[in-house]
Image (cartoon, rainbow, N blue to C red; front, side, top):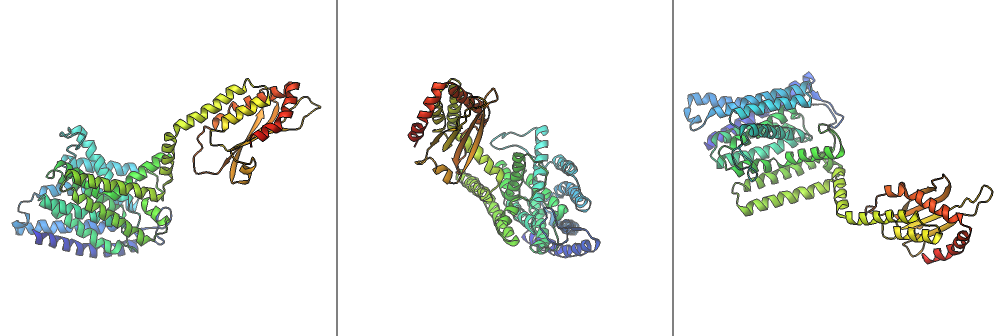
Length: 510
């Protein structure tokens, strides 16, 4: 059996090598190329039908094996070739979809519809999601297993399509996953799956010679969709002989990079309110390029990530409690640190919202202080009261200073000079104006539409979020303050008191 595996791998690799070069030359002559621009990173046209070579090498190698088995029956001893056909026929459907998309372009709904049909064919052939370990350990009824099977196939198929953004990235990542399936199938003595895995690995490796940076041919949807579908189908087929936990956990971990990329893309677009199917240049490889890494360095880094996921998945072949905990800890920590370094704006916003939730108690306290000041201003009728109310409202929140410019309008012929009340958390009142800061100016207009001045609120620049609902200061607060000032200026003896007490009040605030 070992000799058979080696022979199939070598033949598939050689056939893929030759076929890739021929497909590249034919596609170039006929103009079947991907043009630069948009979210594409290449600078010159490149043929994008590399999947044809992989499909041809995989198909011809298995055809040769089946043909030789007619002469040498020992080649199929203990194997059930019908399982191969139950996977191969829907895979041909997916390959045809990829060819159509490469040549003419296919919309997302057409892609998902064809992929759902192919997944249903797998389900009808006995390759299905049987149960959900730790959630629903019993055998699932068909009306639950069918949509879960379709979801798994569609998700994995498109995950490999999604990471096909750099030379050799999708093919290299798929190669690691394929080798994992080969090892798992050997351990579980699933000889047919081992044979299919090693054949697919040879086809991918032969193509990768021309696809690694600088690539002379691209994988295309015909390749990425076909490879993704084959891997999802092999995972379902392997679930029949492997223990339930192993059958589910190993494929999920081994597909770590494409699943992570897909999850991040969906979450990012949901958070930012963009359609899920919208293309962008914020994938993991784009972020690494923005950090200054070269094209080849990014691919090598992501190869290393794929290799780590592959090795961690193999640890689950012996699923003890400590092994499971170690794998989950390493995967979770790695993903967390990696996403943090990618600096996605969407996740930064989620982090801000989370911190805002933690600090909600202080926000409520600050909001209540402003609301309390609003109620007290409605009864205030002199400057001492107004000043004390404003200080009480702002001394506990994140604003650092305020300046009240009160402009009384006694009648149409007499306008008193503006009176000022200043307050600051700093040792000197004007220090806030000298430091880097921003300010908020509220025009004070009474309910009778009389202008009474302005309130300028300062805050020094800080990384800490403002723990206050600023809308409270925009709504009723300026009107209530303006009415209080109007009442203070409307009483002659209070006017004199205010003029005499303004300087001491200002000094007391220092």
